[in-house]
Image 1 (cartoon, helix red, strand yellow):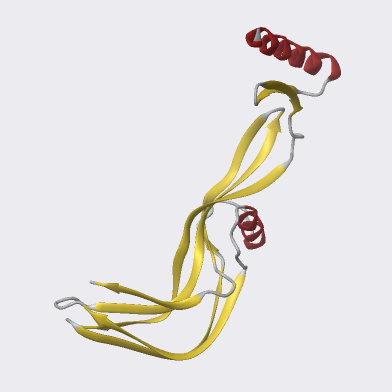
Image 2 (cartoon, rainbow, N blue to C red):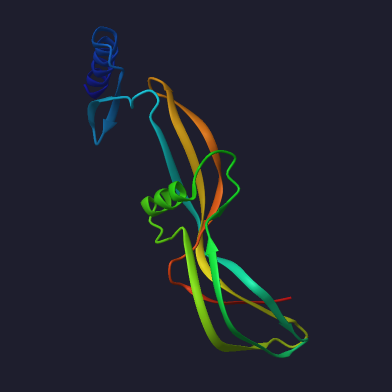
Length: 176
């Protein structure tokens, strides 16, 4: 019986789009068939999906020591970082931040840190210790789309971007 209801709903959606002039499509949601209209032609949107929530955006020098022992870094500077992207089109930093916030990122178009502190880390024997100060932001995949015909979407631009955190700064440590 459910298959007959779905078939009838699809037929009704086709007739509605022919006679009313408003394109519609049928969607099955929790066992019920609902009619929905398509977005307006020309409507543009920017969306973001999270690729890496703990992405280190390094600023300043890389401190390196070893092999083995301890690496110590001391900094007393002011840094500002901004949204960076490799997007192949016209997506602004503001649109990237807005889409990132919609995806659950607490980011900012730019972030500034003034710091003066020392950080030390033991290095594994035979290895070199490296560390760099920076912001722990979020790497996102962004996409700008437009509706070109009823229910048809065209991708205008896509790529990845790095959105700085508004308040998470510190050292990133790695060994080589």
